[in-house]
Image (cartoon, rainbow, N blue to C red):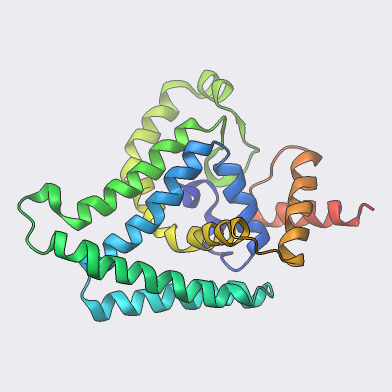
Length: 231
């Protein structure tokens, strides 16, 4: 969904602060977060099961390198190993557990590609649980869902329904970058603490309490610099 609301989310992938800021804004509700925690790994491992082994390994390597680049840029050295281990586990799960299940599909309903769409649709559908709705292209702050529905009405709902297939596709395309944020939460739950992540949490908490949430990258950086300058 974010590519239509915040196109820069797919471009500023290496900006961890910005990606974490957007993930928090768009995934406030626990059930929505949970659907992504489950749906993203399952969509990726199902894709690995559907691809030839060499292709699956190449895609997994590309994602691990992307995650390593984010980790190195933010001095999160341990996350390089975590990223590689996560992709190894997802490829193994896809090849050893899911691949035999999809080896002889009896109908379209057992197609791995349909299941990939299903996992991505699950993630997209739970965004409706969120209390705030953004405007297309992120030119305005997010607004309460009730107010959005009252002011925008049928036209926006119709456009959202028409754009549903593309939104589901965007959920799938966004899986690699969002997976890194999920891995950060996993290692934090396991006890990993980093001064870089602690400062990011503090800055984003101050930014959240400073006023309406901003979506554009330039606005985010300006607001982040402002809150960092306040003692």
